[in-house]
Image (cartoon, rainbow, N blue to C red):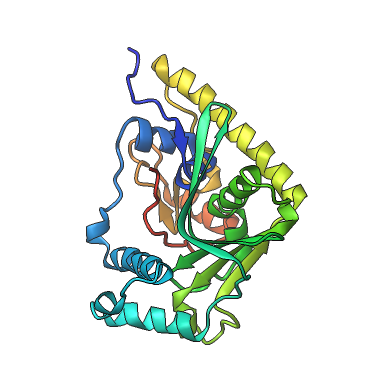
Length: 273
């Protein structure tokens, strides 16, 4: 029996991160429509994070922000932290909630920047995070939000990759005594751009192959169980039972020795548009 689903033409960083993690999970969430994530309304911190992004947009547009600041003390604390210690920002024209689109291999790649600053010599992407500074900056560097956002800006502008950078600002960093800064900046390079293009081509080719198989009634490929992405001592995929991935006690001990526990980064719900 063949599957019927809405074609996927537009891919955000959320799609790419899931594709890179597990094709089968991508299938369950976007093709089978089995998304088990909790709605935004049931996540108070994420809901407040969305309000903070709205606050920063209104502030960038010169709109009144007093009423929004008065709705929550934590929201005001985050904004006060930004005013007191903003991230390094270049001079230039500022655009809030700026969208970039790029057609590649039959798909539209899309990104929405919290803030984009441009001048004749360089451009900077800024992204507001309402959680603490991550312990491992390299994890964020390899995240598809960082890679896609910089890639799209390079592909859709006249800037050279070396003229671009992306900065994350972390609202909760002030609560971390060990944090030396409240931001992370990733300068872009031509080599990184070339590698991202290659990785995108590989991911999209895998997606195309998976879609062909899916249309003939086959499930998309699963990740190797020993990678620990399905079930591990510190993690359990929401589709583990559906994929018949169960962790026995001896397997749990083996994985615990083999895997490195990486702190998860909570994300504001992705804009897939």
